Length: 79
Image (cartoon, rainbow, N blue to C red):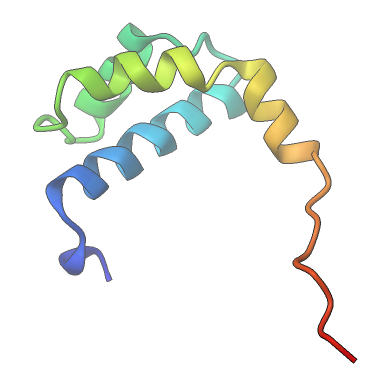
């Protein structure tokens, strides 16, 4: 439930969704573009450092790797 999230968690969600939307649209994932998308979607109170951090980490190449990388499960149970 979104009401139970902290402001930082909400900021992180909004910023990551903005980066994913830019990726999906084939747009440049830059702090400026993330900020523009956050503003356009009414997320005007997101801390200014989030777009910078996320744009440095969530490059198109890294997002692609996360999407296509196989997910491995946890260890098996004991016998």
